[in-house]
Length: 411
Image (cartoon, rainbow, N blue to C red; front, top):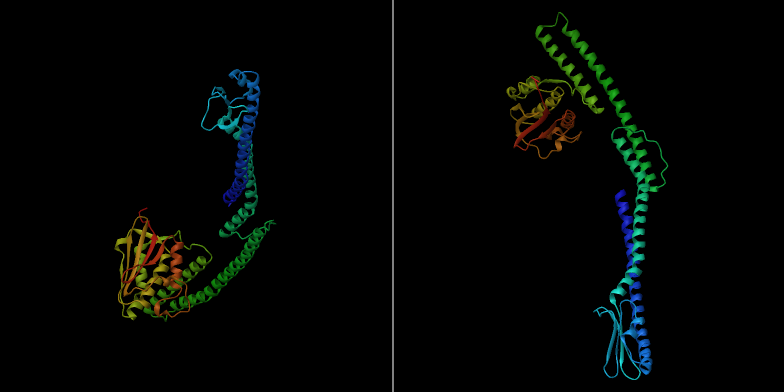
């Protein structure tokens, strides 16, 4: 902004100086040339009278003419009998010349050097040029000072906006003299109050949701745990209760991670687990549902036996496998491909690929027949928070690619 203001001031000054100085220089030059031409004509007439008087008394010689000439002047006297007397500087093409008739016969030709006249023009125009340069420098200095003064409020407002982006919503009120700056400051303060209120409500909702969800889950866990300890409980039922307790613990952890993600954190980003075990456990968790739907789940963990991945990625795997069982067709395949610094987990089924990437948008309330909802949107956000990315590949069959940072087990 400062540079543009300075350039605007300088351009305006140049335009004003040019509009005033150029015509002024032409006028001065024209006045000097006109004055010199008139002077040459007057001197030629004067010399014609002087030559007539001189001829009446004596002979016109070069010695007689030289004292009357200045630098760059030349006079040529042609007598009635054709005698030519010359005095002064050598003639040039750009000289100003005037010829006058001498009474009694003959002519006088007087000329003045064009180079001398050009020097007088330069001397007269030079003050205009100097004044223009001085005004240009002063305008540039004034432009810099004025630009700094005008841009200072907007620079402060830019800093305030950057602070808002980092989460600092405390903004001291400043009295800006520029109306536009005051309007922007008021808009920023209004936005800060609105954001602060929304963040407060979201934090309260997260805290309330955590309490409201964890209380019944804890109660349910205690009941199932108590039931598993009954002597009357058969061993197969006790095993299923143990599995249910494990899933309840996972549900509680998932709720905690989602709430932390909603607060802007990165849940479990520093916790690494073996990716092969993560894939196998995810397949086992959903195998019963797949059998019920007469579907099959194939897990191929061999390529990632020595790779560790962020632990919260298991939540994304659950969403992808559930999405494949709910909306896909045929066999569900889960595999991993390690790369340099990253590992890619593919979850695919034999159903046709959905059109576009709208499945990653938050569209709650729509029919689940097309697979829309917030599960994939949350998974994509969690993948970004873990330093990875979730995308839908362009293959003919539905294939999701979960790109995650990897940590070698031997590292």
